[in-house]
Image 1 (cartoon, helix red, strand yellow):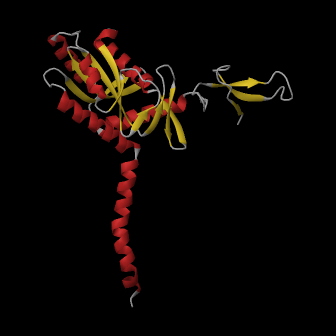
Image 2 (image 1 turned 120 degrees about the vertical axis):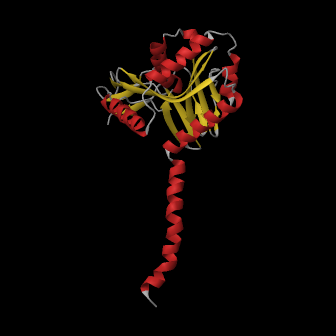
Image 3 (image 1 turned 90 degrees about the horizontal axis):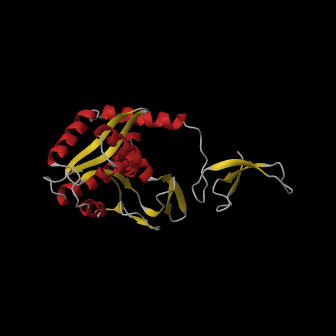
Length: 258
C-alpha cells in the first residue's frame, strides 16, 4: 500500500482538527472576549434604550497628552453622558472603589486586574476636557458580562449584564438641553480618531509603551496594595531587606526580594 494512502486518514482528521483548534483558541482570546462583551452591551442598548433619547457612540478613540484613550461606549442623553467600560469575565470578583487592583478568583486560580472604575476615570476626564462638562453631566458605568459573580458590595454604577440599563434609566433629572446633546455628539465625532484597524493597533502599541515605561510596581498578593522595600530593624533577621505591604499594619504580607 502507498505510504500516502496510509497517511490519508490522519490528514483528513487534521484537516478538520486544526481549524477547530484555531477557532477554540480564538474563542478564548482576550480580543474575542472583549468583542463579545461590547456586542452584548451594544445589543442591549439598542433594544432597551430609546434611540430618540439615548444616542450610542461605539469605540471612541480620543487623543490625550500621553497618546490615546479608547472608550468602549459613550451614551449621550439629556440626562448626561454615560461612559461605559465593559469587562467580559467569569468567576468571583472582589473589589472596592478605593482599591487600585481588583481580584478575580476561578476555583483555586486567583489573579488581579486594574480597578475598572479607575480605568474609566481617564475616559471621563478626557471627555470632560473635550466637551466642557461638569461632574453632574457625566457618569461612569462599568458592566461585567459573562458568568461572573460579585463577592463584595459594589457601587450602583458597577453592574452585571443588563443592570447598566437600569442604572442609566435611574438618572431622570435633565442636565443637558436637546441642543447641547446634538452639540456633544458632533464634538465627539469630530474629535475622535477615525475608527479603523490602524487606529486600534496604534492605540494598543501606545498602551504597551506606557506600561513598559512605567516603573515596575510589585503588588501585595493579599490586598493589592503597593509593596515597598523594607529592612528588618531587630531580631535574628536584622539587616535583611524584604518586600513589605504598604498597607501595614492592616496587612502583614512579606515577600523575599528577587
